[in-house]
Amino acid sequence: MTVTELANAMNTTPDTVRYYTKIEFITASKNPTNGYKNYGKTAQNRLKFILSARQLNFSVAEIKNILLESDKGHFACPLVREIIENHLAETEKQFQAAFELREKLRSAIDDWQSKPDKAPTGQMICHLIEAGKY
Image 1 (cartoon, rainbow, N blue to C red):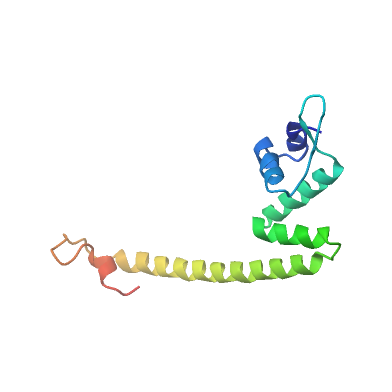
Image 2: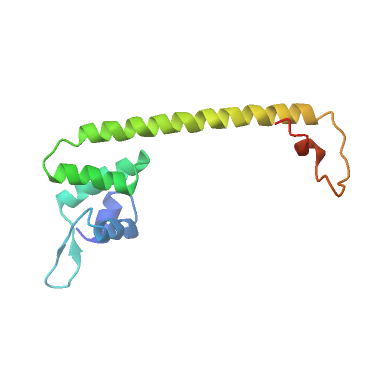
């Protein structure tokens, strides 16, 4: 199948197919008649894996490591589990930080509703923020 046919089959763009070909995550053979790249079932399966991994926010470097393990005939699942556990831990930290920020913003809004506006001075831009309470 051609670049466009593979892209359509995987619901992605031809540029995406070309990118993963360029970085050698998938391979194609060249049609001797017209020079077009032809992708087989292996490329389609690998691209499906790559796109699914990207949906889980795996980086290109992480996917490369997984593919290398698989290409060596090693089990890739332990590496995948380790990566996803690290992603979850990082996501939990980011979620907690976002939750804490949300609470600070809510508190600031509640507090600032009753405070008057003040004109800036040479030393102050906005007293609401510069009070340093948050």
